[in-house]
Length: 174
Image (cartoon, rainbow, N blue to C red; front, side, top):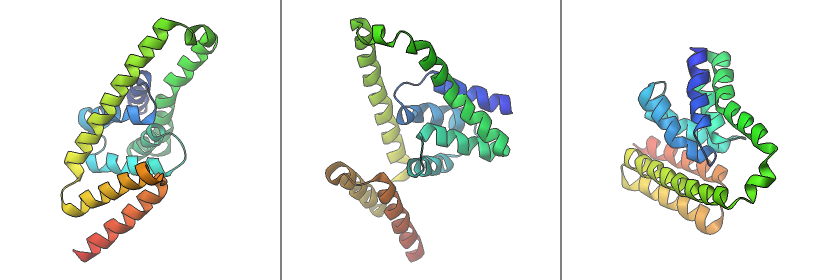
């Protein structure tokens, strides 16, 4: 199981460009849909906690998942799996970075990759919306959170704390 954890997260880390948010569709596909290691609700909780804690969201999600499945050894295996591809690729590219950065073809390739990353992130947002915003109050929390971040530059940490408080108040009222 530890090797399977490592390998699954290694593949996710290997085929993802664009950082933690870009990994979300791959994480969702692999650990929720394919492996059934965590539920939709658990992965949403992991994303939320990952946003509030230091570090990269994908690393935090992999650590939480590994810990859930196999304790500390699982957390280490999953975390190493998600970070190893980046470490290997960065080390390999470090020597030729200056040459690559000035290469027009490489710049065009990365422009295309960035567009795909945006599309993947939009897909995740739409899917999360469909699965999680089920009533007027949830929509209001979403709208206020987006407004606070986009227009007022509010910290995601404080928005998540406020949303958690609001969720507790709503639950207590029901």
